[in-house]
Length: 259
Image 1 (cartoon, rainbow, N blue to C red):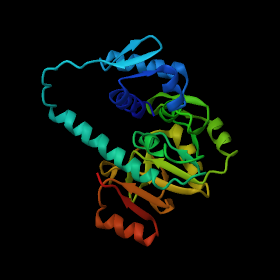
Image 2 (image 1 turned 30 degrees about the horizontal axis):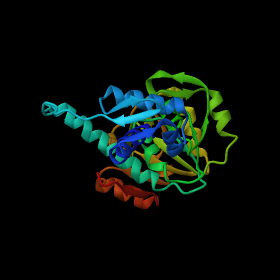
Image 3 (image 1 turned 45 degrees about the horizontal axis):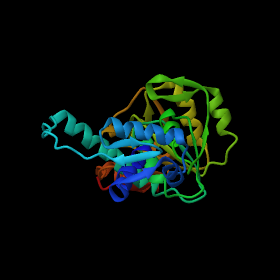
């Protein structure tokens, strides 16, 4: 992934002091255009300096101390960390040679960095976020469903999505929800995505629901499935007793992240 690649380029420069563009392309198995975009970003941040045919590490000047983040920033960072930990635990369920579907959502998209060590996995998705992240790596087989772009979730919607899904033998489905409850099940705020989610729930593949604890005991506009239809739920905190009892009765696996 791009973030990992930028960090690794920085680490390589700290070790080697200089490196050529051709070597970077070979190491990361990406095109020169991709490496040049990475270099431009690192140069913008004052980390490297371009030289003929490659880059060198720029000597870092002392920077003034940064102000402490305000409470809202700290809360946002904490929320993102919880989503990343959920994504990491969910990614552990993926095995080599799997064909998986990754739903649109701000939690599911964080799975991508944790899938880099898997071998020969195919990702089917309608999420533009997932497509953009995967496009920077040669390690993934990506199948984009196509369709009409739905701006609020940055995802494809419409009949063509379901028509595409019919062509593939998906082994695991990673679903997102904007709110869940025992009474209302898993819900979505988008009627345009309802048909896609419902089709996926009816698929015989293993269904994994990824939600953070802020989604508990809430319901969005439309229910796309009962919680009993889910095979596994991945959450960031231990569930209240009523949920634990419910999932135990319905033989639903519960995975709690370590965030």
